[in-house]
Image (cartoon, rainbow, N blue to C red):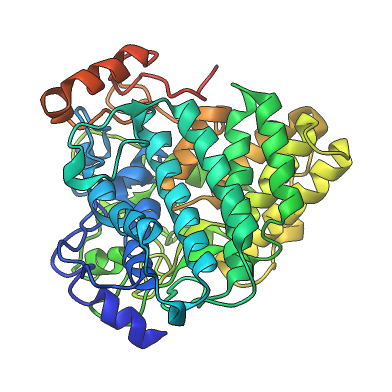
Length: 464
C-alpha cells in the first residue's frame, strides 16, 4: 500500500504547489494506458482538497487568518471548478466508459461501482457549492466544450440512481490499487450508501418526501457501522505525500488560529476535541479563539490558539465522510420522523455520534460521558435539532465545505459572524470565464438561480 501511494503521489501532490486551492492542482499527464483502478487511484488523489481547503475552513469559520487577516474574508468573484472536471472526474469517466477494464484489478462490476461512488461524491461536492452545474453533457472532452448546466435537483436525482446502481452491482471480490479502503468492497458499499443517506437529508427543507424515501433506502442497503468504515484519505511520513497543513506550518507559518466562534462553544463544556483541534496560547496557556474576519491590524499569534499539532502532523488524515456523520444524520432523521423511534432513537444516535466523534479525533472516548452530561449538550427534545446541528459542526472540523453546506441547510450553528460587514455566503460564484466561454448555458443557469450568480444566491435545497 505504501509503495502504491508513493508511486501515485510523488510529483503529483504537495510538491511546490498548493493543491488545496479551489481550482485543485491535478496531474496534467495521467497516463491514458492506465487501467480502471489506476485511473481511479489518480482520481482519489484530489480528495484531500475537498476536505482541507483553507477557503472551506473560512466559509465554515473554523479558522481565522493571523498573517493576512483579510484572507479570512469571503471570495468576491468567481471560483473555479475546472480542475475537478479536468482531473479526477475525467479519470473516473474514462473508467466508466472503458470497454477493456483489466480483470486482474478485480471484478469489473466492482471497479465500475467504485467509479460510480467517486463520481457521485465529487458531483455532490460541486453542486452543493455552485448549484446548477454541467453534468449530463460534461466530461465529453473535445466533443463538447460548452455543456449545458443541469439543475441541482436533476443532478441529485441522477446521483441517487448512480449510488443505487453501485450498491446493486457489487459482487464478491476485492479490487487493487485502492488507496482508501485497500480493496475492501464491503466498505465501498457502505460508503456509497452513507453518501446517499447524507444527500437525502439535504432535501429536508425542499422535498422531504423524496428525502425520507432515499434516506430509508440507504439504511436498508447498509451504511457505515463503525469508525473503521469512514472515508479517510491517509497521508504519509514522506515529503512528497504529506499533509498540506504540515507543509505550511513546518515553514514557520503561524498563519491560522481557531476562531472565537469555535473555541467559545467548546471551551466552557471542556470538550476533549478542543485539545486536538488547537493549541493553548503561548502567553496564558489558555484556549483563546481569534474573531473571524478581523481587519484591525495583524493579530499577535502568541495570544490566540493556533492550529493543533495533530491537525498539521505530516501524516494527519483527512476525514471526508465519517461514521459519526451518519449517526448525526440518523439522530436528525428520528427527530424529523423519517425513521421510527422519536426522541428515544434520536438520543441514542446523538450520543453515539458524539462518542464516536471524540473517538475519531482523540483516539478514545475519554470525556465523552462528561460532555454529554453538560447542560446544553445533554440531549433535550425541545432543542434537539439545534444540538445535533451544533455537535455536527464541531465534528466536521477541517471539513469546511461540508460544514458550510450543513449550516446553509439547518442554520446551525446560529452564531457565525459577518466578515468585514459581509454576511456568510450561501454559494460559490461560477468561474468568471464561463460568462463568455459558455455564455448561453451560463446565462440560462444564472436565470434559474434564486439571487443570481452572487455569493448570496441560493442553491436548490437551500430553503429558509
